[in-house]
Image (cartoon, rainbow, N blue to C red; front, side, top):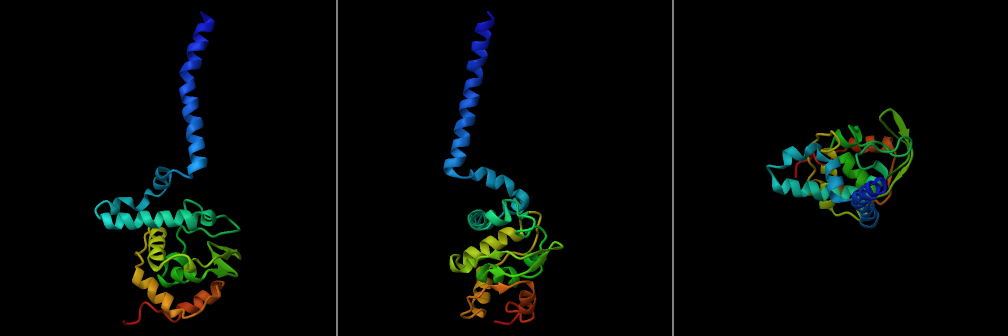
Length: 191
């Protein structure tokens, strides 16, 4: 009798083990399942339910963030202490629209203070691979996720900032240069 119970218990556990192994393999083969990415970023979804277009833009921004930004800034925007700054309540992201657009378009190298810590890593210029729409979507996504609640950024705003950069390809040289660039705003000028 004892061996029969063990055998029955073993069979009962077997499907769970098989399902677990298949699930883990699926994550490794297919990447992070979309439902996990979506579950990690529910902070602004309530406002999106009433606007399907905004929801689609939010989802597109989340996908771009997952592909292009999360390896450094992490899935939930917390960054990597000492290496990459957090996007949570970051003045560089939230104080104005032009600064994050400039950073994404040209990249950043050199010291920048964020959250009381100085970072001196390199952020690549994403402007060479991302369209104005992609940049607007991903920045709108991070400005409205991780507890952030800033205004969306439009494709037109990205295009205006990109045009203001002319033929510059050199990354921003730290926070001091970005602060200097804020002194000549592009988006507050009349069209």
